[in-house]
Image (cartoon, rainbow, N blue to C red; front, top):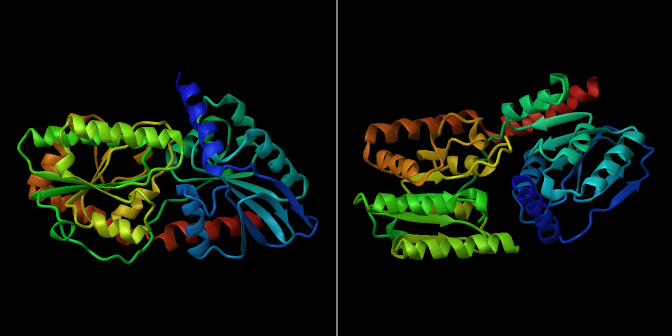
Length: 364
């Protein structure tokens, strides 16, 4: 059932998010140089991986050519493909990787997801020459599949500096004593339904807490159903008067951070999806320099500055209560977030590492 649900989700995104067929294009491919092609099918669209790719490019990636099509251009010697199952058709990707290698190009897969139960994808994924992953646990899964460490590079998700205007609860017309903030696309795995139940748990313990949600609903039936179910759940729990949503139409990140700055803490209640990847949105909200509560799922295995609890309403509810009422605990995790932001700047740990990897591969 898990495999069927995952495949249905992937196909739905392929058909409804991209709404086009990625083409194989070869342009004067016999002329090689030292330029990196950065390929992401969702580049320029509403997609976290598309945003990640844009931020890599704008952050100082050296000597690159971006594309949202499968393309082998002249002067390129390395082809980086941003990979998540929803972004690719397996057969097309297999053909393209083979074409790149036949034309003398080195192929790097930047893996944002790797699910061993997709058996028919494994040979395609492992056919790449090198891999970029964002979590040591994902590197271990590749090791288990027979990939040696010299073909795997771990690139941390850094924190991208963004200027934003701080807001207060009063400016957002929030009259509650406390506020919890959360951020992410409105999708089932984000766990916002769990957070709604957690806040009901907190309310029943006489803590006056508002919920500030910055969340965009994608134009597909999955997201729209999640939105309808969440609003239904909020009504059932009688949380309407403490629920404040911004960003039903996608907001730029500086506006998201501005709204969330009115919150006292941030909660990221993701469910377990066994991707062993890493969360870019977590790094965005870290810029608020507030305590962050996450679930203890594999998606957050690469971070230790957050307060982790099981993805259950009562566990998240107790954590919210504890963080809002224990000043020492609050200060401890606020300082952890500040230190993480200081030591994990995007240009250093992400873009800088990427440039080092490209130079190392060219030197092999």
